[in-house]
Length: 338
Ligand code: NAD
Ligand code: UD1
Image (cartoon, rainbow, N blue to C red; front, side):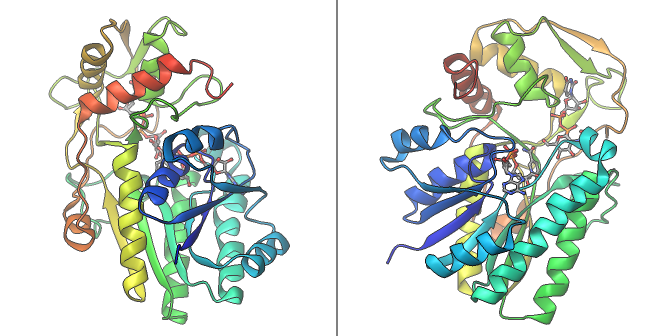
């Protein structure tokens, strides 16, 4: 029997790629998305990749009546919960809006799941919960000191889901802490399309390469790293997507709560990314070194060993492929799904 998985935020960047991995693993994704940061034309692209358009519902995870209806009408085997807001700067400007969407939204979803007897949940957390870590690679038991409302919203959800799992031990919960998701499906048909000026490095580099922006401003060249620029653990979005399928399978095995890093375990500097992107695209990326970005951490990367042991998951795609796939998507779709 095919298991239907409710994918909240499934029209977004990571959710859409996870729908591909789910379909390829024999699951049926059912997307619930309010389209606040996505374009539903993604489902046509998903149909071209997997041979079948996923079913989708336009709606909000905070809408309890809608959730009750979905759980009553569908046989949902589990939920992967991507729906949330993710811009750090916006979260500083509108913290309550962020807690309302990310925290309250998860609580409404959890209560609707409990009422329906659906007790398998994979949650999108973030390495941002570690804040400024004491050392890298970061293991899951490192202290969590999120530095902004976005990060705190993720941490509050982690803690309240842990309380919930203690109170209701039949639940199967996996909290996935993503490092820096980048890249696109290798077909070039789906990818990341930020609205307005990108905050994140890879989409910005893509837009410089395609001529939409003049140059990259490197946020700081005087960090205590090999080349002075910030170091992160970039992880290919299809590796992440496959990590979700592995996490779901693990959750279906037994009740409990697991917290796992999803990263490569390798750090790359801003200039490493620029060089890899130049090699992948054959374009030169103009850049200048600017001041540090407030709130940025010099360097961090994951210890992904636990995900390796528990899920048998390991990132397989390197920085070259992340850049090549991001470039294929960017070139083919300079205006996203328009
Ligand atoms: P995204 O914005 O592309 O996807 C999120 C999707 O959720 C969007 O389609 C949006 O329309 C939808 N959504 C938001 N609030 C909703 C609500 N209340 N009800 C229904 N739909 C709603 O972002 P993404 O990069 O795919 O991130 C997915 C998840 O992973 C988010 O929870 C994010 O915080 C987390 N995460 C992302 C990153 C990253 O770098 N992209 C890193 C760590 C964690
Ligand atoms: C940011 C968020 C983090 C979120 C993550 C999602 C902040 C402080 N942190 O992380 O909470 O989970 O995105 O992937 O916003 N850089 C430049 N020039 C640019 C853009 C970025 O030099 O125009 C540098 C940054 O200084 C950093 C690296 O590139 O060293 C990666 O930046 P970014 O992609 O924004 O990710 P994070 O800062 O790691």
